[in-house]
Length: 249
Image (tube, rainbow, N blue to C red; front, top):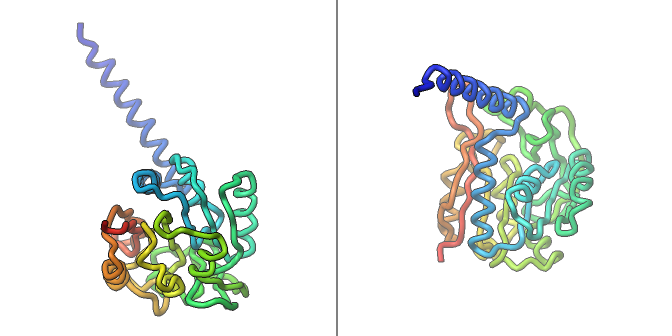
């Protein structure tokens, strides 16, 4: 016997429930696509035998937590310059013996610098913000300036005895990615994988755009593994995304 009407009602209820869940996740800034991308990153780490992640621009630890929830159990070294965000990051990492934290920005050379603090925290940058960014995300406006310590990828690799061939270098520094890469020196082409936030439009003053960043990565022997579309303006134009690249060997 057919139960078509009853089944149709069940399907509609199920779809409404899915939409409600998706809406809730969106309001909580827990994008489903980001979870999928993080699982792709975790699978890449496992398949390539990567056991260390150098997490540059950690904010409050969202990226590291996502990797843990996706099954990655290796070492994580998270760097975050802002005192407020670092406090939350260090509390989250405290119960994880394989998660280390560093309260510093990462750049071309060691020293000190001023960082612009955004209202939403994660848009904070050493660089000035452009109108294109403000138009796309009005809640990202700068509200303060904080003096922070700066270290380099090369110094971090030495301090934590990082083996580049078994390491993913993740850089999410709001337009400052080229400076972070410069501070890696000759390690840049030796990390087995890299994940970077790249911009197709200048969102931070003087930043290197996606085309040039990807060209540099190719020159160092990397190929595209995966990407996640992330940030668009009100017209739907893609402004920024994350790319995952791996050594082509």
